[in-house]
Amino acid sequence: MQTLISADRIQRRVEELALEIARAYRERRPVTIVGILTGSLMFLADLIRRLDLPVRVGLIQASSYRGPATAPGELHVAPELLPDVRDHHVLLVDDILDTGQTLSHLVDHIRALGAASVGTAVLLRKIGRQRFSVAVDFCGFDIPDQFVVGYGLDFNNQYRQLPYVAVLGKQEESGVRNQDSGLSHD
Ligand code: IMP
Ligand code: MG
Image (cartoon, rainbow, N blue to C red; front, side, top):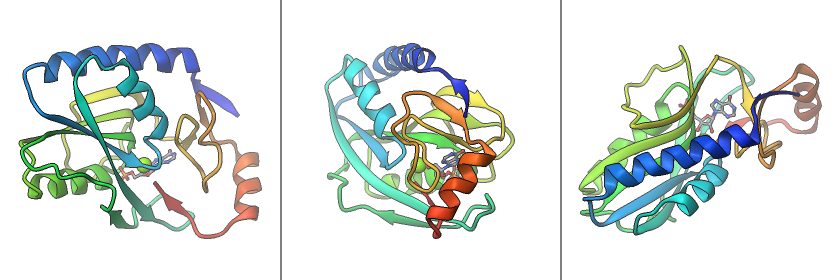
């Protein structure tokens, strides 16, 4: 597979983002960082370890079910792991902004729960794919419209463990497709 962003570059950028976020949230209390499962796992873990800020960490799961094509499907949200965010400054953390469906929906959801503010941070943003309007406050890298895996991002639940981000090759794609059927993105 072709590496798009090396592990070193990711770590350096996450460090910069942690500094920016700490600066932006210095005056705000209390702060809850909410990771969107499952793709944000690595980014969330690396980011909060570098964040010089008192924060609480929460999780929410969101997955969109899609066919083999990359059109957005119906979004399913499982809020059971989310703590009470009323009056908290919430920063939503996700692996990638693609169509924007997940983040725009979750921003509305967290606002409706009474958060004091809702910010967004993504490791990656795909150029030319956004269809749902959502403001991204912190972004690691803008990438071309290619399907990527690694550093939390999966294809059919494979490749999340890679420490770098790679473009999914045709060979890997057909290998994983043959092992599994229902495609969901989270
Ligand atoms: P959305 O279209 O912005 O709602 O993106 C939904 C979710 O799709 C993201 O949180 C990712 O989990 C997943 N996704 C989008 N593009 C990619 C990709 O290139 N690789 C792996 N997962 C992706
Ligand atoms: Mg995701």
